[in-house]
Amino acid sequence: MELIKRLNIDFIGNRYKFFAITALFVAVTIGAFIYRGGPNYGIDFTGGILMQVSFKNQVAMQDLRNSLEKSEIGSFELQSSENLFIIRAKRSLESQDAFDNAVKNAAQADFPGNEMTVEKVEYVGPSVGEYLSKQALYAFFFAFLGMIVYVAFRFKSSLWGVAAVLGIVHDVAITLGFVILVNKEINITVIAALLTIAGYSINDTIVLFDRIRENLKLLAKEDFASVINKSINQVLLRTVVTSVTVFIVACSLFFFGGEVIHTFAYIMIIGTALGTFSTICLCTPIVYEWEVRKRNRLRAARLAR
Image (tube, rainbow, N blue to C red; front, top):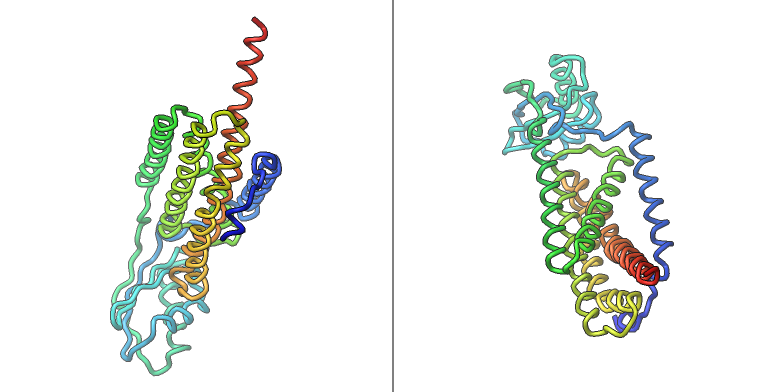
């Protein structure tokens, strides 16, 4: 910790290297979309088949999950209440009968002598339909607009708000790219994780921007690059401690949290790293580039007079 306090890294001087890393991340994201042919939407977006089953004798949920993973039903979600199980799967099989038979065959193979009863089978529509998808997009748009207005009011410049929102878009889009790259399904859990990343990212960015604003008053005689570098180095300890703490928790969930929380933890691991990177290496360099070019244009205009 004492070593971090004594650091004096020239973040602004290395901004073009950071921009190159960002360009690489964007290329990977675009490549993932092309390679996978777009997102792999889950049942929440596509709809599917719901089957409710019960067993004569007690069956562990993880044992049933392992059995179904070996069957032909493909992607599925599993819920349980005592000895009653609800299986939701995408319509990957030709018919409802094919789905019914696949589940029964899996149960007979792995739980011989334990009679399974099918309580009901029905088709279910997507829980996230076209209307909700549009509403979510509107929510994102107005949330980003609100952030821009708030940050612009607080820092007396819309540039800071735009830079902060660009950082959020960077984190969410690239994290989504890594989700698509490993062919994980896009469902409600993924959306919740991406929103969590967005909140984490904007909080980190506001803390750094607030320190820069304070130092612009305290260090008014120093150049803009020096003020930004000092501000980043001053909050670096806080940023590292926060990010490492979240990262460790996310890794614990990823390795020991089980199948249900696995995707959420994966997104938190990627998003935490990207959020820290964008705050320090993307948002502040964007502010610096814009302000410096703006000042150069104003200086050139005055000289032209």
